[in-house]
Image (cartoon, rainbow, N blue to C red):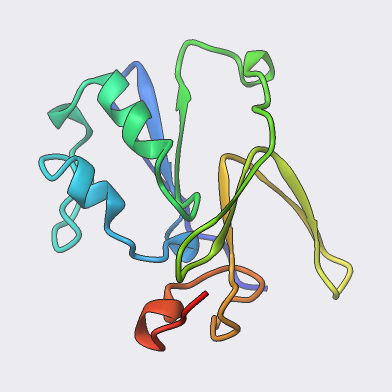
Length: 141
């Protein structure tokens, strides 16, 4: 089994968690906060270039859930699960916001928090999740 890569970036108050395998490269992060996100550089996230609130607002819009965060001074058990919300994006993935238990056909289960992007085009190489293929195959739906 391949080990999942997880990177964390902190400003002391908030820690951004980045899971690159989930990223569908929509560019929403770069569009929202170009001073923070620099895909061609290492480290690619310069967290100190935005306020904690700006970071929280941007991360909430990440369509794949590749970006999430936690507040450093708040115990994880104190964070309330958000209500589950489903969004069918135009010509793109099915976005589920909230905490999900995903049961795979292999019997493996995983818990997904924040945003999960499920493939609708059928072309993803990371099924059941979206990998951005819908853009290259010009999926309409």
